Amino acid sequence: MRFGPVPVGEAAGLISAHTVRSGGETLRKGATIPAEVAARLAAAGVDAIVAAALEPGDVGEDAAAARLAARVAGPNLRAEAPFTGRCNLFAARAGVLVIAREAVDTVNAVDEAVTLATLPPFKPVVAGEMVATVKIIPYAVPGAVLDRACAAGAAAALRVAPYRRARVAVVSTRLPSLKEATIDKTLRALADRLAPTGAAIVAETRVPHAAGAVAEALAGAIDGAGADLAVVFGASAIADRRDVIPAGLMAAGGRVDHLGMPVDPGNLLLLGARGGVPVIGAPGCARSPKENGFDWILHRLLADLPVARADIVALGVGGLLMEIVSRPQPRDGGASAGEDGEGDGGKP
Image (cartoon, rainbow, N blue to C red; front, side, top):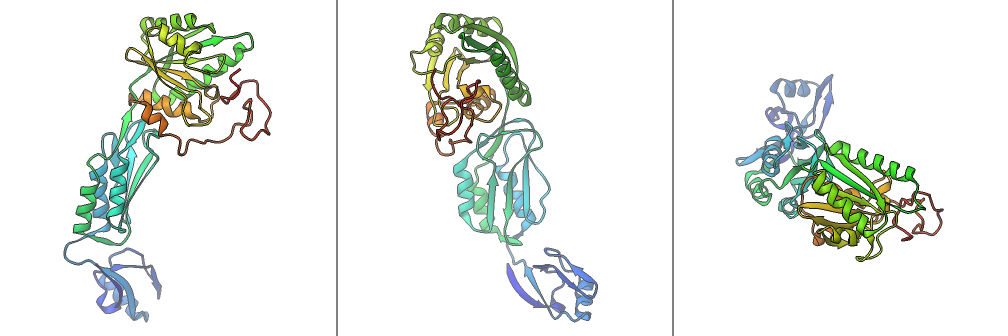
């Protein structure tokens, strides 16, 4: 592509690099210059226009953006018509955004003329939400550069994993120090979290804070109510793999896959399963409607995305979330405790 000032008499058919206003005539940036407009600008005293001219093999910005967007867009994504060298991708349904990060990085490394930006990986999205944008920086890009970018961007490098698990069971354990109103509030917060995903609470059980009671409740919720995901809210935070909730899960014939994660609030989350049904031992912060590490795991599981130990331990970078001032033991030591214990602190 050629770029630079050209005599206005030779500008017809080229692309205007900047907006030009003169003699009542306005030539918009990025517009193809009509011959009659060039003539009127010349009559108004304009000598030269900064313009771009495509050369053989060049691909215009809109066509290039659309082609790359089509290459990287996977299931449940739609591309809108390109404009000014930009093509946006939108979620076609609710779910979790899955990104082949290495492919995105490789696309962006091909040439400065080609860019691809996305939302963070594993972000929950709703239908109609913009999740990515392809932007071609100049007015055209050499075809060879576009070919390399499309080759670097793996087919379907971006996709939305739709929510598949819809039947959630909740087991809440009781201790004398825990108010029933707190459990009620916890259930409302969870129901609100589930609403955008299409999932709902299908079974809710409150039992003593004892391993045997947790085991019986989990078995009943999964075998009896047909839950495809179970969440256990403990009256006391999980302090060890031998604590009440993990012991109850094991006694119910389940397994503990991982305890703890490098996300705060959310450190004391337990992940396990009974048969093919995932089980989350919720951290105390999950009682709060504010985003915390529980949300990150919950949405992946609802979308039936596997969550392994390696996935959890990789959450540390970016895992320090906003401080909750009502947590029993705030990080900075300067906040007062709240009755709900929205953080994980304390292990009462």
